[in-house]
Length: 184
Image (cartoon, rainbow, N blue to C red):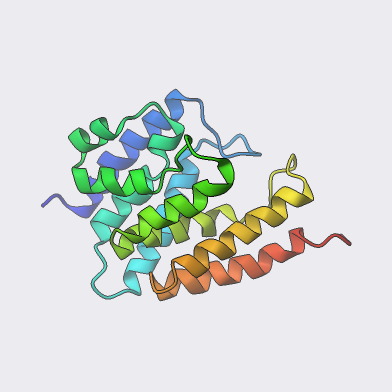
């Protein structure tokens, strides 16, 4: 078994290169996308310390790779070869299916996530925790409200995944309400 630090280094280097190859940045910023990936992973690391029987190495890899199929040219086969099939399946579940109508994509992804381990559920929670920051300036109020509503859907659907992350996401959703206020 590789040491956790070695697993982290191998995975973040792979993910950082793939996202950088697409010149991907965090929406609304000029920060390299790897910052988002490391923030999601930080949530997973803290959650793992609060959760019995949590497969930290697996969850860290999935967190670092969670957007790689959706946002880069990386294939399922490439992920399987570089890591393993379980990680590739997890990343695929976290990837929205672009071939179905946009309004069905989140529910479809959540259905696929629920068939996998609680660590995969936890990555989805951690991803949304990380994304509930100040909305990008180009988002209108309707998009901001829809994003919060989607966060509630994630929280409700993945209830029982990870108590620590559920509490964090619930707090973030509450704090995000200030961006949904039409009187502001």
